[in-house]
Length: 238
Image 1 (cartoon, rainbow, N blue to C red):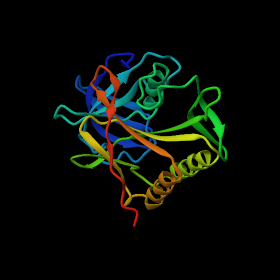
Image 2 (image 1 turned 90 degrees about the vertical axis):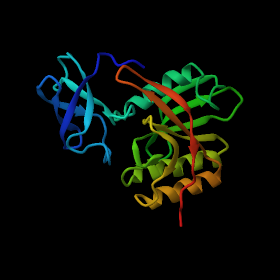
Image 3 (image 1 turned 180 degrees about the horizontal axis):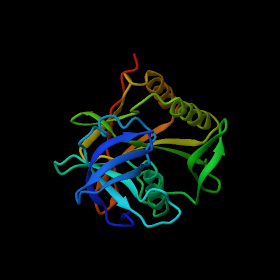
């Protein structure tokens, strides 16, 4: 997916109120950008970080910039927009480009299920079990080459894993899909030291038959595209 408008580089001053970031652009302007990421953004929001913003001229938007990338200045990037994975994956699913999820008849998004939850994607085929696909954006990396999820405690994520397991128990197929929005990671695991309950719920869901799929991304200041499957390393749940 290409960015709608060319990104502009700058230096992060601060991220605050979760959804706001002050940035000094390379042309000297100081601007406030929307940060489409409700997570902690551990390791990505330090003052002085090199970032890329997407400008817009939409009169309905109060902020004229959106924070899209962290530039690690070594040829690697991290995508920080958590709304992008679902948009990108919908296109890939429709084009039957997601490994293991390329044989289905119809696709629906945000379908109610479980206890007041909505599944990201529900894939259906006449005469076959439905496939429930939950998507999580992964941006944390504390060790070279290793991506981790989550970057903060996520009771909602734990609930989703339990609900996926319930769908398997009802005879359906369920997939927990982690989209690693980093170009510097070849493996992924769960940050059990950050959220032990989530790691335990993942282990229980796996035993119940929930599948895990981790995919990386190809990221540049021009575009973000779906990459290849990467190895999922089982977390320590002791």
